Length: 394
Ligand SMILES: *Cc1c(COP(=O)(O)O)cnc(C)c1O
Image (cartoon, rainbow, N blue to C red; front, side, top):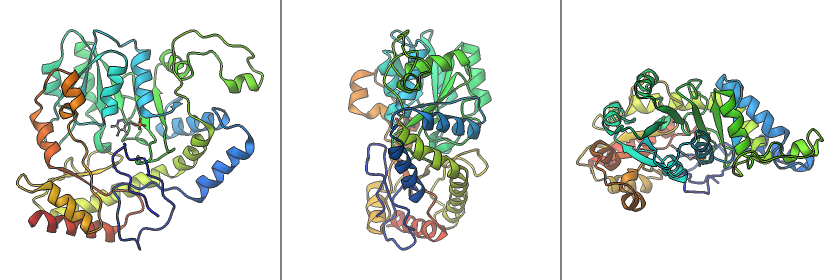
């Protein structure tokens, strides 16, 4: 059975490796999990060592090779990774961090975890729904310490423009790369990047994440902080390499376990092919939408560097989105929204200074996320495109 994985709060995103050609309901996202992952999990259980150990280390090495970096640090989630980065950088009360409102709440929450103030920034345009440099410049104050860039939908932010922006103002750049696993540029923008392996991402460990940090001192600090700031872990003590330990800094329990790492090792072997398939499907969407539903805006351009994490489209201003969502569902197609603007959520409205972000609001009103995952084929893209064209016209 295929489970409908949609927004990150949906937790039932585990499916078998059944082909989807013969099923009638198309979810928005669908992890590829099967026989190889099952075997890998059984091996961990048989080994008798299920917490952080050799497989976590191997996963970190394999991930580093794919991202062309020296090392990576596996953690329990992308949220944990972002929290560790901000905590390790000493960002805290009195500091401000620029962040897009068009993101998943985790990006904003991690700023609140360290006691700093998120400053929500508008998107550039409907066609380029990434954080706006102009609006960020307007919102920068002497309290601003860092920027969190989100590679929304897998499309990379403009590195040289943001580096110039950050250099001129002495700001740190952090990447929320939850959508961009597998892209080599991730981790090269500023101090650190966090990846997500949640169930609906480009690859999954069920729950999980990783941090890419170029500076070795900062990386070792984050590595320690992942395990309560201890100088050695259970595995090192078990293997006899260091019998005792000291605690030298305040950390958290943000470790990854061997079961998740074992799944991740398998998934990483397929990531490049999966991202390639996503790219192919996205190109197909672009040409079919242009032909059959030219009134639909497809953000970004075909040549942009991306991991093609999701397929966002913007429906015409007058179209009734809830009607479109319902008629797509009646046609057996799940759609979701990435994202309801964060600044409009009750919690942030209550706790952050009130904001008007007109472009984010318009995008949030008109955006619709179409299904995109490696096991889709041309027939599905055609079916989805035709259903969309029909539902926005009636
Ligand atoms: C999924 C997601 C996260 C959170 O990832 P977790 O691994 O679930 O903590 C953060 N930011 C963005 C943009 C995401 O899509």
